[in-house]
Image 1: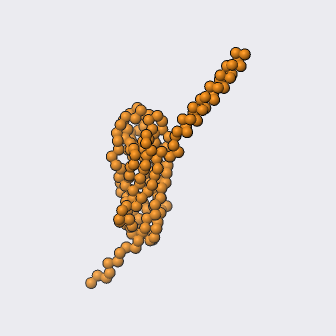
Image 2: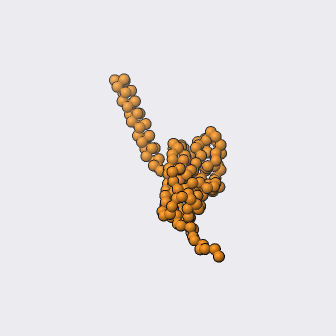
Image 3: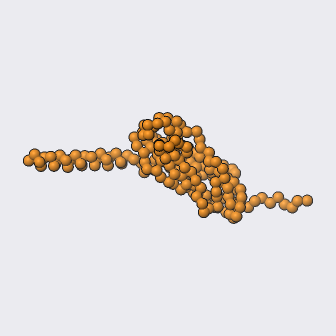
Length: 176
């Protein structure tokens, strides 16, 4: 009888642990960071061989952190932004990042730089001189890790796209 009670208690304990795990994992959002790529306000077009700066926007759910692009080793994965090859656009300068918040992070037992809420990175792009004209897709890849005050999600990569209108260069007419 005592052996049967121990087995039932072990089964109930296992079920309880599973229910607690299922309950806590149900509270993890699928995507605590939403990404979008946007054109600048006028001018929102460019020419073959020209440049344009796009806005890479991140909306971070409350309680979560998006880590800065530069972090000391031994902590979370820093945010890395790149322009994939095989398109009419390439990176044409340094990516701008707003000033991050610096605070102690209990997950890594150190002070880290991160962003919360809404954050916008500036992505300077150059259009290939041989790109042609029309609406061309510009793709930007973001690798990042996000954490809250209790745990971190695995690193992830997202590719976001926006259509950039590439127009013919203005003609200045014949020189006299």
